[in-house]
Image 1 (cartoon, rainbow, N blue to C red):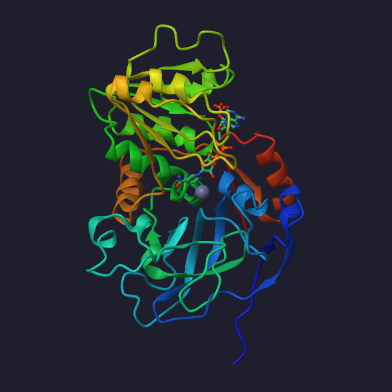
Image 2: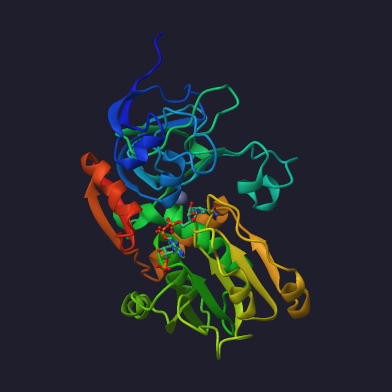
Amino acid sequence: MSADQFTGWVGLDAKSVEGNLVKTTFTPKTWTEDDIDIKISHCGVCASDLHTLRSGWGPSDYPVVVGHEIIGTVTRKGANVKHLELGDRVGVGAQSYSCLKDDCYECSHDNEPYCSERVFTYDSKFADGSTSYGGYALEGRYPASFAFKIPETLSSEVAAPMLCGGITVYSPLKRYGAKPGATVGIVGIGGLGHFGILYARALGADKVYAISRSKAKENDVKALGGDGILASKEENWTQGWTRKFDLIVSTANNADLPILDYLSLLKPGGKFVQVGLPEEPIPHFPFGPLIQNNVSLIGSLLGSRSEITEMLNLSAEKSVKSWVEPRPLDDVNQVILDMEAGKARYRYVLYN
Ligand code: NDP
Ligand code: ZN
């Protein structure tokens, strides 16, 4: 039997990030009875898609189909799939496999992103050697264990970017203390960062501030529920703000992070969690300020399956609404250029 063929917008080389995706067919992962096929209706555009198209984190394995904020309906399901039915509306995020074995410490402790067998939704390999392909496509095939039913009250365009952008900030906010009594800062108000404001608020933090480069997004930050904005490109910008924050989550993806300035904003015992992943190393910095102020520097990847479900339910319950700009999938090449230019407010969502 010949392999199935799906249709999508494929990146053939690093120049694809310049708006050169090609609409063509690709061979999805080899079917197993643990999988589902979906007809994709929506897919958010994450900065990770651009990093990957550009080979910015190291060589990508072209051809690639990026996109990991996917919503679609189930059109085929494997015999082992119990929790989904044909026609269900599901979401797939940036991870589409982990071993889920009882003897895997990570999988049995709500830490699937750190499973040593994890497979990302695109530009990754499954154990059988087949390649993972993302959501800039008309159809997709994914292990059902990483497909999540979407609560009815969340529209597909609102839900799509939660599956990567949302969970990547929700998880560290929840784990590291965005709750009543806490003052939280979010560095970089883009796709992830705008969710940072929304979820820090939804989790009940007392004060939520944006830490942006300028004050250009101030009105948006207030409309998202933030208390104010600090502008890191202004002179003496930390004045009056040192030791005020319990938790800072940074989504910035530039290498010239003013890391010591950010750390100076933390109270002793405070935590700085970096989720943005620059392509270049950040500059050297001394350990002194960490030690003298007892602050922690933490990295965080995506979120667990239970956190994804919890985030979707909380979003439905509290009517958390992603700020999205829907764009037709056929315009994807222009959308990538607009994303690269920083024009998204705050997430482009491709639709079929
Ligand atoms: P966006 O482009 O939507 O937002 C990034 C924000 O960072 C911008 O809005 C801007 O905020 C700030 N920024 C951009 N360029 C610079 C610069 N040169 N100097 C300082 N700040 C800058 O990207 P996303 O939110 O989609 O993704 C952010 C990062 O998170 C990416 O690196 C992505 O790959 C990574 N990521 C990590 C995940 C994880 O699991 N850890 C999962 C998903 C994504 P402002 O204008 O407010 O300064
Ligand atoms: Zn992403």
